[in-house]
Amino acid sequence: MSSLVFRNLGDNGPKVSPICLGTWPIGGGMGILDEDESIKTVHASIDYGVNFIDTAESYFSSEKTLGKALLGKRDKVFLASKLSGDHSPSHIKIALENSLRNLKCDYLDLYQIHSWKEEWIIEDTLNELIKYKDNGLIKYIGVSNFTASQISRSSKVTKIQSCQPHYSMLFRASKSDPIDYCSENRIGVIIYSPLARGLLTGKYQPGHKFNNDDHRKNHKAFTNQYIEKGWKISKILDQWAKDYGKTSSELAIAWVLSTPGVTSAICGAKSPLQAISNAKAGTWKLSKSQLDEIETLISNLTVDYEV
Image (cartoon, rainbow, N blue to C red):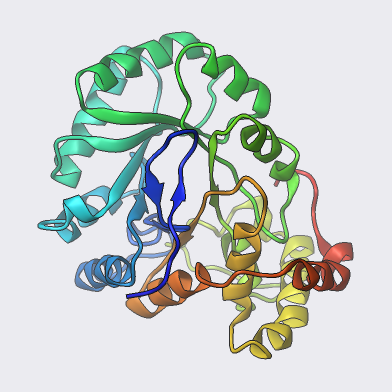
């Protein structure tokens, strides 16, 4: 068992681990994985003290795999999923029913709107979710990929417990909007892609080609200019992290968790070893002098616009 220190997810919110297991990889987002290995990955994360797991309607087979992994363990985790499709009342009903059935559970701790959709009126979408919250199928309502103004508008309808922005050492656009806004308004912040979709692991050099079953292959974050920046950051910080007995990946996760207002970092894992490494990163508290030193080393490589 690790020494993860739990944090409140938003104002008067539940206690969650600073590491949230992201299940896009075990759903097949980075290529098809062995289901038994994926189940072991979930168990390794829980055994190491992670109590927070995030999935989504659109994460391929992740909900079904996670449902099998959580048999007998549902009470050990704060379980979050997302509405990824359209926001019509009929689809919301089907999506939530499918998620509950696939996850083999009676309720979701957190149900999030995966992204803002201009074609749907947010007030109508939230009022629909409130019905399911009142019926006990959802405990908390959250949003993902929303701007500060969109979160502000949503908060006028119901309490938004958390937001889920893209943020990392490399891609920093979300710091000013919405992370700072959520911090000021005591809304939980759950970061996704703290490793910049893998660019900060040191595994990908310019010119890298993904396999056809890896859904990152056409993502704009993997154009050569960003691969080069991520590669340089990982190389610069690799030895720095080694001096502390850590990896550059653990450093990238610890750095995100040091950002004021951030509650938890969603970290995907394809194996038990990766899950444990991610969890260990959640125990590393960086000092101000360390953060300043890191900033001096990489400030000319960061990206302050959304990718």
